[in-house]
Image 1 (cartoon, rainbow, N blue to C red):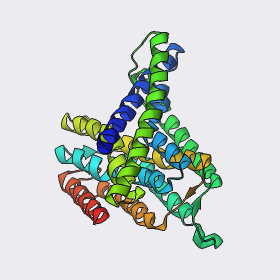
Image 2: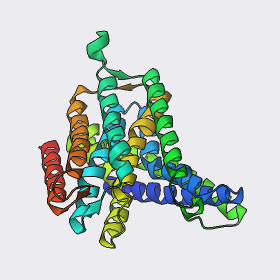
Image 3: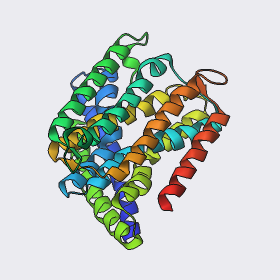
Length: 317
């Protein structure tokens, strides 16, 4: 029963995020907010809502390993599994701005997390803690990334109204979508956190492993489906940029806000998982310049998938 409730929670969580984005986008459009700005704010936040809700609930319940594992696991899955599987279907070109700014920024995000989580080596304390002051630093980095994204998009040659396509709805319907989305995110998140904890205890797995393998995979399924379909249709030019942007959101916004609400005690065993996520980002950056240049081809995709398979095997063993 707990497995069914976990799956139900994931379905409710992901569906509610989509409903919330639809309602918020429609309301923003009613106030004449440009499509581009809606895409950069409402839609971008919407893709991180599932991870955010899970992390907030986990941090409030002092399930610190689950909170960190969810973010680190999502970032690893986004690169090794999502990009790997998508590029296996059809090679993916990587945009110049992604190579020059976004991938290095995602690498910086993992380095900042690794440094902040291990400040125990610098201040002499017994327990590493991601504190509220660390959260403030993370949020500052997040605002810098938002500013960069806005400037890049504003200076692009595309017309601003060619951004995210917004469906116009009645204000009452949009408001209802907003309320239903928020409520669904909360109840879906509660189902996931509660039942994931039970599963971890029953299987003898740690909260971190459940967060990395089960919850992170569940919250990354929409990105996997979207990227795979886009790659198959040959429209995946922006897929890498969107996925890398999501990784930056996860670390600086999701984890930053979580630790700002409640400090997170860091388990040193998670250092290996952070290093795997960091190594994945470095591999992505290196692969862009190898073989046929500025794209991820099938050989490199296989390397990503093999590494993910090895990582999962190591976690389970």
